[in-house]
Length: 119
Image 1 (cartoon, rainbow, N blue to C red):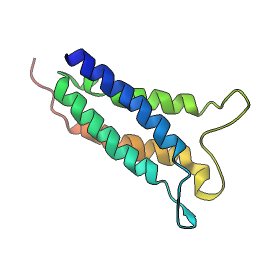
Image 2: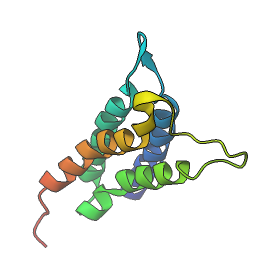
Image 3: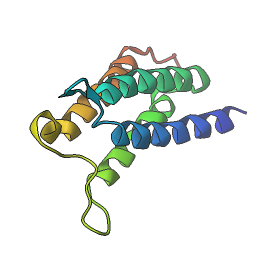
Image 4: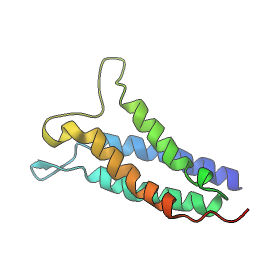
């Protein structure tokens, strides 16, 4: 059961990366604001917390975060027609950096605070 839950949480990490990246150019009024990056950070922290509950080590608890990071890295490469997911005018030119910091930061902080149980 533990392996199934960890696999599902890892798949959720991939889904979170794709959803957050595609919703990144959402506007708040007339200003582009990375709302999805903030929400992604909270969701990633929740995924890492849940994985930490089911996993016995930090390495396994980090699986959703690693899946998220690999998916974001793959989306920076561009598509077959030269399309890109990250980029745009103004603050959106820094969207990949904002997405990485705001999306992975809370989960990484949570992992760093997690105590490793004694062997």
